[in-house]
Length: 209
Image (cartoon, rainbow, N blue to C red; front, side):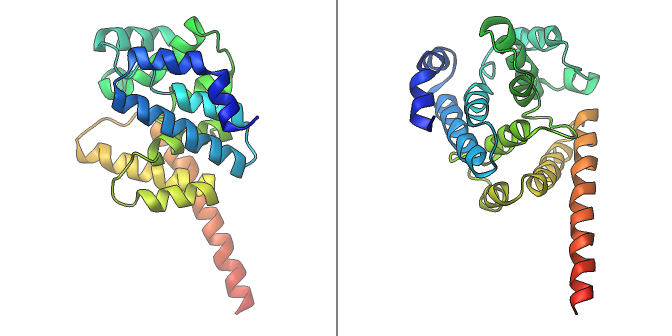
């Protein structure tokens, strides 16, 4: 199926988003679904899972703080104390819980993609990585270096995850925020992969000199 087919198949989900999100957040969600679909095609991932998880990743973003926190805890998806203390992270596990409890979406990759699209973690599936990176690099994003991250996401998912987590952690530290254990583990995991690849390239180049 192509992207238009998915838009038609999930028209009711788009209407649901219209009822719970602002116009700006709705546009962002549709943009994330679009780039997630394109990334899935590029990296031979499941296009439907990536499109739908990208579309719904922020479904609880504009819920009341009390409801977000309650749903996050109800998710029982390994929510750390650092996340409980960080309201900006509540909507992700809350959204995963909502997908499972109210939209009959029980696919673990999709639920994890929504749950970890802000915090990240180690050893993410391609669907998870694509939704994380799609959220960071969607068309509506305009921060410095977004084009670099966008291009790298199409070239190398693991390298993009390393730089994306590095960027995200830097932003969090700049605001004196807390780092969830899953975020630290994710950074360490993708930093090790990135360093191993770079070291391998350097050894290969030195042999060719």
